[in-house]
Image (cartoon, rainbow, N blue to C red; front, side, top):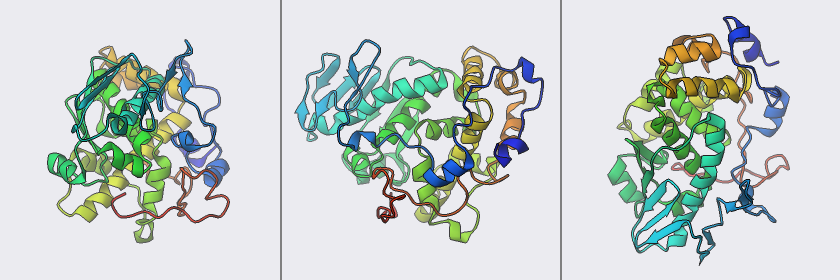
Length: 344
C-alpha cells in the first residue's frame, strides 16, 4: 500500500459506499517507478497491430475510415466537401486537406467513446462539432492559445489543433480521448463538478501521465512541480497568461497536478466503480456534494483536500523520468528519449 493511500484512507461509513474494484491500485510504487504511467495510445504504430472490434465483430477506431491515404468507404461515415462525420462527431476542415488526413481524428474519437465512456459510465448525448484549423497560426488566432494547449472546448464545440500537427507530435489519440471525455462530462450534466475533477478526469482518461511527466523534467530543477488544488484550478479556469513561456509552464503543471489528483482518486480510492457512482449521481440530478458523499464519504472540498497533489510523493516519484511512449521499451533499454521542442 502506498504512503498516499495510507495517508488518505476514506472517512465515513465504508459499508454504505459503493464497493471498491478488485485489483486497485493496479500498480505498486515499484512498478510505476520502473515503467511510468501506462500509455496504450501508441500501440497502433507497432508491427502487427490491427483495428479493434466491437462485440458484434465490427472494426472500429483507427485505420477503419482510411488506411493511410486510401479511403475505405465505411458506410456509416458521411463525407462532404470539407466535412466528415462519424457517429456523434463531425469535423470541418479546409477542402485543401485530403479527407484521409483528417479521418484519424474521428477514428480515435470513436475508440475514445468506448474507452472513456466505460471509465466514466457516461453515454453520448447529441453531437460534437469539431473545427480543424489550417495551421498552428490559425489555431492561435482562433483560440488565443499556444500549441501546448491542444484544444479549445466550450459550449459543446471544439477547435482542435490541426490533425497533421497532432499526428506529428504523437499526441492525436491522447487529444481525441481528452476531448471525448470532456464532452461526455459536459453533456451529462457534470459541468457542476469542480474544474480540478473535470479536467483531471479528461487527462486521466486520455492517459496523458507519461507526456505530462516528461514535460515536468524541464521545470523540476526550479523546485516542486505540483500545485495546491485551488491554484491548479484557478490556472485551468483562467485564459492563457500573457507570457507564453510562463503560460506553457503553468498550464502543464496545472494539468499534471489534476492528473495526479484523479490518479489517486481512481487508483487508490476504490477504482472506477465509485467514480461512476459519483458521476451518475450528478448526471441524474443529485447535488454534487451529495453525490460525492454517497460515493466517497466526503464532500467535494474535503475530497480535493485529501487528494492534494502536494501531499505525499508523486505516484512515480519525483525524479526526472523522460520516456518515449511511442518507442516502446526505448527508455528501459537505455535509448535516449526523443527530442522535444518548447512547443510540444
